[in-house]
Amino acid sequence: MNKTIASQSILFKELPAHHLEAVLAIAVEKPLEKGALIFSEGEPGNGFYIVVEGQVKIYKLSLEGKEQILHIFGPGEPFGEVPVFSGDVFPASAEAVKKSRVLFFPRRRFIELISADPTLALNMLAVLSRRLRDFTVQIEDLSLKEVPARLAGYLVLLSKEQQNPSEVCLHISKGHLASFLGTIPETLSRILKKMSEKDLIRVNGKKIRLLDYEGLRMLAESGRPGQE
Amino acid sequence: MNKTIASQSILFKELPAHHLEAVLAIAVEKPLEKGALIFSEGEPGNGFYIVVEGQVKIYKLSLEGKEQILHIFGPGEPFGEVPVFSGDVFPASAEAVKKSRVLFFPRRRFIELISADPTLALNMLAVLSRRLRDFTVQIEDLSLKEVPARLAGYLVLLSKEQQNPSEVCLHISKGHLASFLGTIPETLSRILKKMSEKDLIRVNGKKIRLLDYEGLRMLAESGRPGQE
DNA sequence: GAATTTCTTTGACTTAAATCAAAAAATGGG
DNA sequence: CCCATTTTTTGATTTAAGTCAAAGAAATTC
Image 1 (cartoon, each protein chain N blue to C red):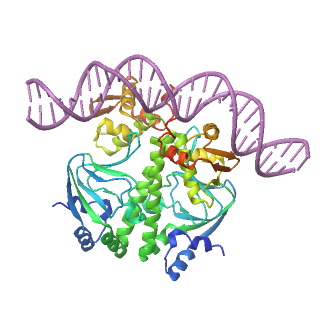
Image 2 (cartoon, chains in turn green, purple, red, blue; image 1 turned 45 degrees about the vertical axis):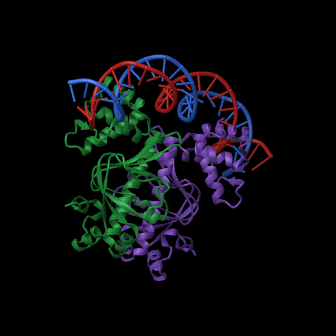
Image 3 (cartoon, protein in one colour; image 1 turned 90 degrees about the horizontal axis):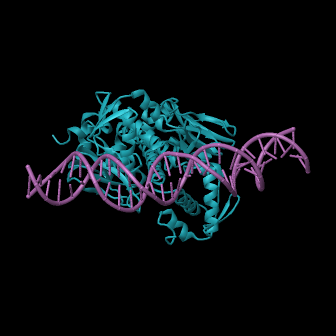
C-alpha cells in the first residue's frame, strides 16, 4: 500500500496503531514528475511532506543562479516542516530529483494530532533536532574545512551507511554532490582526480572505491593526510 | 526575581500559569564567569539551558583553532536542546561571552512536562523550527555569498531589531562578529574600511552608522551595489 | 595613570577555489 | 543505434579571502 513507507518513517515510530491510522488518514498523496517544483522559498507553508518514493532535494538559489543543496531526502523522510511550527514561510525550495511520490500533511489537522499525542510531538522534536545537528556540521564544514575535507567526510559517512564499507555508490549525480558540498562540478571533478592520484580512492562513474579509509578519515578531520 | 526573564522566554509563551510554575520548578540556576565553558561538542547532554542574564556563544572549533560561531544568545533564549530530543551528544560547544546566569532544565523531567503539555511541545517545535530557518540562511550565506554581502545582511538585520534604523550598535566584539560571519578579524576589518570608503557606512568603534541603507540591502542580496 | 593584556587594523604575500571556455563522456529517447 | 541533451572533465586565468607579521588602539588591572 502507498502509505507503508510513510508508516515506517521515523516520525511515526512507536506511535500506537490507532494514532498512526489517524495521522495517515489526513495525508494526501501527490505524484511528482522528475524536476517538479514542490514549493519555493518564501511561499507560505500550509503543511509538510513525507517522501514515499523517489528523491527530493531541498535547496537555495543565489541571484546568480548558483545552487546550494541543503538536503536530499529519500523514502520515509519528512520535509518542509519548518513553516508548520514557525508560522513562517518556507526557508528553502523543494524539487523532485526523480519521478517521485510524496504524502502531504495539512498543517491545521496535523497540529491537532500532535497536540493530542505527545509521542508524535516528541518524534517531531527528534526529527528537527537531528536536522539541526546536521546543519551544524554543514556550517562547520563550509566555514572551517576546504572542499577535499568535505568530500572525504561525505564519502566516509556514505561508507558507514552502506553495506560494503570499501566501496560506496553515489545515489546522486556529481553535479548535485558538488552543490551539496557547497562547490561547483569543475572543482569536485578536479578533487576527485587528485584524490585518485593520491590513491585515496578509485572512481568509476558513480562507484567510488575507498582505497585508504584512514587517510580519508584524517583528511575529513582536516588534518592533512600525513602532513603532505 | 531570577526566573522572570525565563518566564518571558518564547518557550513558555501562552503557558498556563500552573504549568509555567511546574516548569520553572525543575530549573536550576547556574552563575557563570566570563569565558566559562558550559558544555563541549561531543559531550552527552542531560538537559538544556535558558540564558537569564549575560551572553552565551554557541560555536565550533576546527583543529587549527579557527572558530565558527553558530549563535550568540541573550536573555530569554534557550540553548543546548538538540541532545535532549535527538538522544545524541552536543553538536557544538557553549561558552559565556560575559559574566552570565543561566537556568538548567534536566532532560528527564522536562520531557515529562512536555509530554503533559502540548503548548510546551509546540513552543519547543517553534523554537527549533526558527533555528532551522536561521541555519538555512547561514548556510546560504556561507556558500553563496561573499563576506561583504554577509556583513551587509547582518547590519541590515541589526538595524531592523534596533530602535534607530540608521545607526546600529554591535553587541559583540568585531572578532566575534568575524567568527559569526565565517571569516577572520583581518578580513572583516578590511571590509569595514572598504564599505566606509564607499560611503555605505561610517564606523565608530561598536557604533556603525548606515549611510546608504538601500545600497547595503542590495549588497546583502549579493547584487553588487549599482554594478560597481 | 602607567602597564599589561586584549582587540583591531594595516601591509605584503599565498592560495583555494571560482570563472570562462570548450572538449569529452554518458545518458536517454525516438 | 544514432542523435541530442545533459553531465563530467580538462585547461587557462582571475580573485576573494586566508596567512603571517607587526603596528596601533582600547580596555583592564594594579
